[in-house]
Length: 104
Image (cartoon, rainbow, N blue to C red; front, side):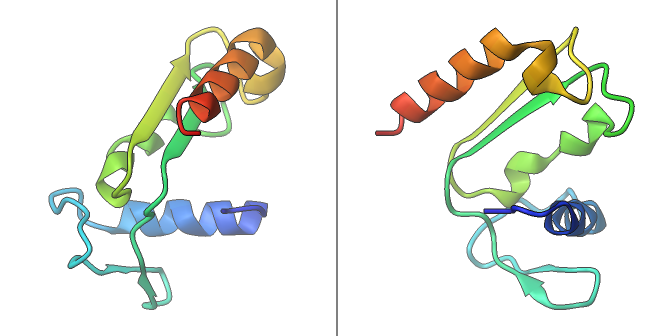
């Protein structure tokens, strides 16, 4: 799990550097910006993004599923910004709750 802003930014940079033409598989090796191999993500992933976010571009999620070997859920919320959990609290709460319940 990525916990720090540095880890998140590092992961995003590495995702952008990989060719989007190759789907992720256990045989594909992704390299970080420093050349170290990065293993594909093998657990389910939930991404919730506010479309009015001016700090993170929604297009940055394009191809996310190419790096995850488990199910990937991306929820884009049109009227939410960078602080999506505040801008759309009820929807975010319900989505996370339902997403986790479905994986018990």
